[in-house]
Image (cartoon, rainbow, N blue to C red; front, side):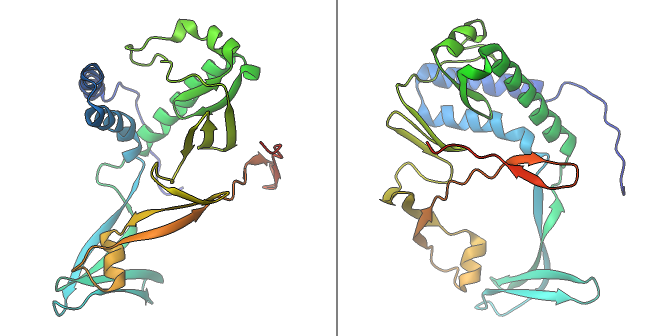
Length: 253
């Protein structure tokens, strides 16, 4: 153990949540899709940033302005591999293991744990046999499960449930990969992706600055067409004290 931290509990982000929740409610009332999405992202993504690693770009030298590329170098003094990016007349050393400026893992960990406990209580209230699927902040239940949760429904109260959709058919392939009637939800696959095989999709990929530097040209922006293939393996199981894992075997949908 290199570092020991002691935390004291306290309410966090109260004013932040109140502000954006009110903004989200106003956006819903005005039916402004972009603002609804923006406020939702601001509410849902803040806590995770405190447990997220960051990359640091340290300027270590200069280079001819036309030089552009990436090098992986082994530092014999530190016994570490480093990445150097050269572009726009500068040479940067990039470290991907740095903590973010306002790093506070306890916030991310405790918010996540509390949310899972809340979700677990909802599953128990609905009845485990009545819950087909759950995600970060949602439950998919049958009609009986829905009836058992009616006292938790309130479309405007923070922390309450809201009925988003009803369906006749649900097919679950993997976590974050399901079909609800004709509505297909797959993490990493865009809505406008083109299906080119039973489990393959084509979609656009917009290259980041790092990718452009790696290509050796930052003077033009590149949009690639890539094909993603889903393997749909459920890779979870019971972890035993000796470290071995017994995988769960689920029936095909």
